[in-house]
Length: 324
Image (tube, rainbow, N blue to C red):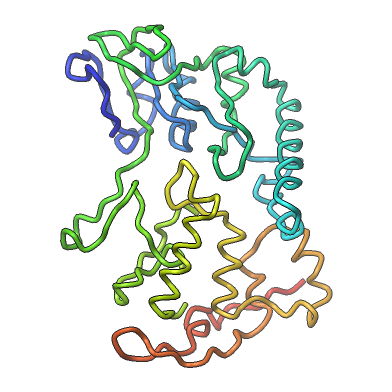
């Protein structure tokens, strides 16, 4: 949890978001929520309906993505056609769509900034992008007050880095988690900057029997250790490694990469009717059930044994293929 100077003198309650169970306990109280990730945004929006006063504390801000864009779930805008566009063009078009949705909500960037909300440079890799529903209109109306980072706690007050203070009875820290594996032998893994260097965010190159499923914030066969290290080094040079969220991946790019390894990317020339949905429709796992997995050559696993028919083991053969 975030270490707050003066927390030992604070007369109110300080808790991590993992201990938050609902807004009822904070009814008619003055609450500060620190952090603009998904937890922070959802909690501060919920608290704003019951608390006497609620404040959102953020140091660098974020871009907030409405859950619906052009009357469709926002992730439906993540199409393969968009993925094929040059990054700068894709960035420009996505920001235009986002600003359009802001206007439809009656929200303007000027008004948000006047309410103290910092908006970082719009970049998919370096800026935080947080889905939300009602946050922005509530900030614009003043229902949710925005403040910079917490600098000091003083009995009944919270002081911020801009020198301003407010009275508060509770602080909810939505500032993430420290990555650790207490169930593994100490020293087995090196954790650097709250991340572990893993091949495809799943396999450790030097520990072939250890895999992590679901560790990345959005996983094949074992490859030669040197190749795995090389891929990890290449990834660390990718703009995604500069993200404020450790081990973040772009969903479509990551899944396409994994699908290529498993040999389950479809042969689109054999399915012409599926081409429009492939490029223009939303991402779906059913896309990778159009064809049988390509047969993979046997490869020796590091430490002995063989790894055969990886894709066939992963694929659920009982599921129907993508039709329509």
